[in-house]
Image 1 (cartoon, helix red, strand yellow):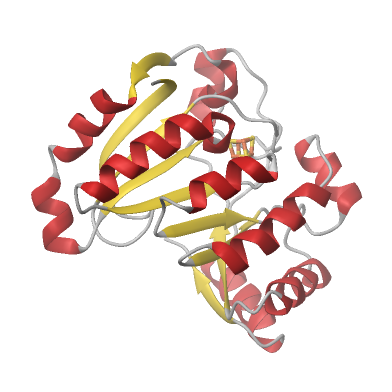
Image 2 (tube, protein in one colour; image 1 turned 90 degrees about the vertical axis):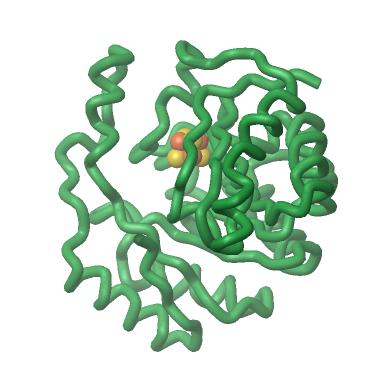
Length: 243
Ligand code: SF4
């Protein structure tokens, strides 16, 4: 089966445990104001490739995965738009003994998530914003389906990590973090991962001729991230600041 892939990055250390290869799939139903992968929806750099070819490339680094507990991460864009391809790729990787991780926004049909849960060891699930109107304004879509899929991931995944992007002025208000923390705690999950906004992606927008909506936004300081973590912990969750 063929999929649309816009990048394969080897030796990643922030996309799940250990050293990993991250496969980025094209297409996304959202348009997050801070999106750091505009290639995902521009489609300009995507190629059509067989799952078995991607798996062959991923397996070239098997020694690193075995030494570090790493493996394959499927990201995007929104990989669940190509769920059959993800199922074939991740099933092959698991059969070869690799740890598999899915990164998703959850803004997809429930059936796509349900199918992929069978073949992944870890789901990293982004919660962009709990308020439906703010989610719509910041990503172009409401979040009703996202929240239902978050509940499905919490109950059905082998392991799940919920992540919230910390974009100053857009997603980092104390009441918003409190609402997200309460939602995650209500799903029976004990931690929330905070992912700080970065500016390193801005050159991609210039290259692709696209407008970067967050060009003027500065990344949160380490002190601000620790304050956000403390806010999350006040609401009964462990807070993890992503690297
Ligand atoms: S879900 Fe991810 S890839 Fe899609 S627009 Fe948002 S940040 Fe970009």
